[in-house]
Every structure is written in C-alpha cells, then in structure tokens.
Amino acid sequence: MSDARKNSLKYSSALILCVLFFHLTVRSQDSLLKKTDTSKVKADTSVHKTDTLNVNISKDSLDSPISYSASDSIVFVIPDKKILLYSKGDIKQKDAELTADSLTVDQGTNLVTAVSQRDSAGRIISRPKMVQAGTTTESDVIKYNTKTQKGLTQHSITQQGEIYIQGEKIKKVNQSDFYAYRGQFTTCNLDTPHFAFVTKKMKLVNKKLAVSGPIHPEFEGVPIPIYIPFGIFPISQGRHSGFLPPTLATGEQYGLGIQGIGYYKVLNDNFDVTARADVYSYGGWATYFEPSYRVRYKYNGGLRFTMQRTRILSADAHEDYTDTKTFNISWRHTVDSKARPGTNFSANVNAGSTKFNRYVLNNPLANYNNQLNSSVAYSKTWSGYNLTVSANHSQNNNTGLVSVNLPTVGFTANTIYPLQKKDYAGTPKWYEKLGIGLNSNFSNQINFYDSLFSFKRLLDTLQWGAQHTIPIQLSLPALGPLQIAPGISYGERWFSRSIHREWNDSKNKVDSTFSKGFFQSRDVSFSLSLSTALFGKYDKFGKNSKLVAIRHVVRP
Picture 1 (cartoon, rainbow, N blue to C red):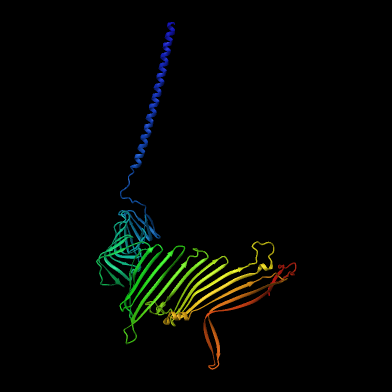
Picture 2 (cartoon, helix red, strand yellow):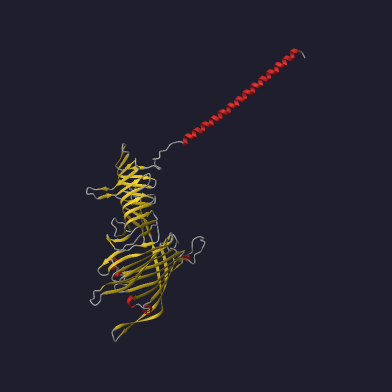
C-alpha cells in the first residue's frame, strides 16, 4: 500500500472519531439540561404549595358566618365597630337565632345585646327571643357573645320538656350548662304561674337535669312554709315518666284541697298509665286511674276509672258532714279505617253511680249533666253479607233508671238469585230473576233502678226478642207497556214474654197476665207492583222555530 493511501486512512479515521465524540458530547449535554429543567419545575411546585398553607388567619375571627336582617333598618357605625338593627331584628349563627325589636352588635367585643320593646307607659310590648338547639328562651334583656357562645339574660322564661323555668338572671357558661338566680320551676305556662317551686340558686343542664339549693312551693304567689334542702328535677324530651304536680283548690263545702297530684308512667311506645288523687281537708278524696294505648295506623283508646268520697258540710243541723261514695268508668276505643278494611270496632262508654256527676267538684258541666250514655259497636262487611253487633247503655241520673241493650245483633244477606245461571247465554229466562234475601235482628234489653239493683231483679226485667224476614221478589217479562213484579215476604218473630189480656167483669177493667218462655209468631204478606211508562213527542214548531221537538215521559 502506498504512503499516500495510508495517510488518507489515518486522516479519515481521525475525522470519524472526532464526529462521534462531538455527537456523544451533545447528547450528554442535552440529557443534563433536561434533568436540570425537571428539577426546577419540582422546586416551583413545592414553593407554590408552601405559599398556600401559610395563609395567616386572624385569631379574633369567628368560626362560622353570621347573618343579619331587620324590617326597618340596619345602621353601621364604622368608628365604634357597631351594627344597629331596628324593628324585628334577626341574627342567625349556626343553630342559634336571636330575634328582638332592637339589637346591637359590637364587632369589637363580639357582643350582641337585645332589649324589650316598651310603650309610652313603660309596659313591655315584645320581648327578645333566643332559640338554640330546640330550646326557646324569652327575656327582658339578652346579652350574647357570638365567639364564646356565652350569654346573660334578665327576667327569663325557658321551657325544658314540660317544665317551665323562670329566673331573675340566667347565665350561660357553655353549650349545656346554665346558672340561674332566684329561679322558679313550674308546669304552668303563664308569666305569673299559679304554682311553682321557688329557689334562690339553681343549675340547669340543658335537656337533662335541673338542680337547686333550698326550695319551697308557692301557690298564687303565696309561699308555703315547707322547705326542702335541695331539689333535683330530671328533664327529658318527649314522653317520659315523672311526678305530676298538684294544684290548690278551696271551697266552703269541702275545705282546702290539693288536686291532681300523681304520677305518669310510660310503659312502652304504645302504652302509658296516669294515676292521680285529690285530697281535701274535710276528709273527702278522689282517685283516678287512666291507662291509654295507641298503635299507629291500627287503633287507639283509653280507660278512666274514678272513685271518690265526697265529704261536705251538711245542711242538716244534726249532722256535721254528708258522706257520699260514688264511682265512674269511661272507655273510648277507635280503630283506624285502613287497618282492617270491611271491619270496624268502636267504643264510647260512660257509666257509673247516678250521683257521681252531682258531686264532682269545680265542674258545673258535669254537675248539670243528668244523662249517661254508652255505645259499643262492631261491624263486618264481606261479599254478600253484613253483620253488626252493638251494646248500648242509657242512664237517667234523676230517676235512677238504667236501660241496657246487650247485645243487639243485625244480620243481612243481600239478594241472591238461586235459579240464575253462572254463565249467561242469550236472554235470561223469567224464572232466573227470582231473588231471595234475609234480614235478621236480635235484641236483649234490661231495665232496672240502681237503688234496687239485684241479680234477681235483673233477671225479672230481662226481655229479648228476634225478628227474621225473608223477602222473595220476581220480575216478570214486560207485557207490552206494563211491568209486573210480584213479591212475597215471610216473617217470623221470637219473644221471651207474652201478655194475655182478659176483661174482668167484677172490677170492670182489663187484667194483664205476663208469661215467660219461648214464643213465636209468623206472618206472610203478598205484593204486586204494576208500572208503566208513557212516552210522547211534539215536533210541530215550524221551520223557523228554534225548538225542534219536546219529548216527555209519564210514569203513573
């Protein structure tokens, strides 16, 4: 190989190596540049997230928004950081709502002040109202901190379950605890209650418990000198068992009394019982036992049993008091019509001693009611048949006569067509229109005087009877314009007593003799009805008349 060719190969190899080295260098730089750019993007992303998390929030800010409204005007006092709401002001925050005629919001201290509206004479027209967590409080003045949720009220009334709590001052220290100064417990919803338990200090745990220091009762604002070292009043929402406070009653005839003291017991979701008592200083008393029940969409009712001993001042100079013992029982029961379609049962019972209403105290409506009535009824309807069973009671408190109808049964079978074919084929035959029905009634009656009540007298006055009627009807084919429908009715009566009357010639009068046993009487009656219809039409009114024709029907 020549020297020139060797030198050419050397130069070519060196050139190729230089090109490869340059290419690799460029690739490596591109790769490094790409990696550096990627790291910069990550750095920018991390910086952005850090800025978002480091937003500074004021420590004095509220944890929830507050909404304001007023029917008249809202005034913002910027230098003092205050908001004034006039006429039906309303402030809402979370579950709390404060309404008043005049409201002031201090944004610097987060304090809301609500005051009562008064007329020109200084009388209160409307009071501020606070509603929170289902509890309503009315006060003369309400001060409430929107940040700490604490508050102070003056002359307040709040309801916890069935208990009304009043306080000259009530302080809310947290979400559930309240302290009251000069408070009252009562079930009367008046501003000045008829009765109350009064204490100087109390603590209230919202919807759970109320605890007080020394406590005493008051009636009509008059304190009773009976002090208890402390008081504990459980507070529950909805139906709950508990003590029923009494009311004070006075009268010249029966003396000083306590009425309605008792206990209410919830047995389950469908059943509860109330027991009450009245006690009077002259020795009279009354007890009430009242169970009630309710099953939704099925039935509901209640029973009331009362026994009373009335001891009143006697009008007789030889007696100091007049004692009378009476009783009364009432029962009501109603079945939902959708519970059992076609079947119904109801009861409304009111029975007792004939003198019971006369001696019910402080109830003029009962005193002048001289009639007691009761009814119990059951009915059932199914395909083609109807059945009714009932019992009735009537009592006259003036005469003492008691009438009882027990039972009264009625059964009706709708008209059936025994000769009618089940599957119609063409025009029915005339005899297929023969219809037969049935009406049956049974009644049992007892009459007696309550003062002469005995089982033997009860049997002597017992009367029962039954009546059965079978009507048979037939609709014959029309005879031209005439429709003929003959009918026959068979009736049968059953009696427990018969009367035989005979003329007495010697005494010149009719003597009646009663006989007991089973007696029957029967009768058959026939009927024939004839009906027709006469049709006519008059159409001669002329071509220009608005009337075309008059059609008339005569049914004699």
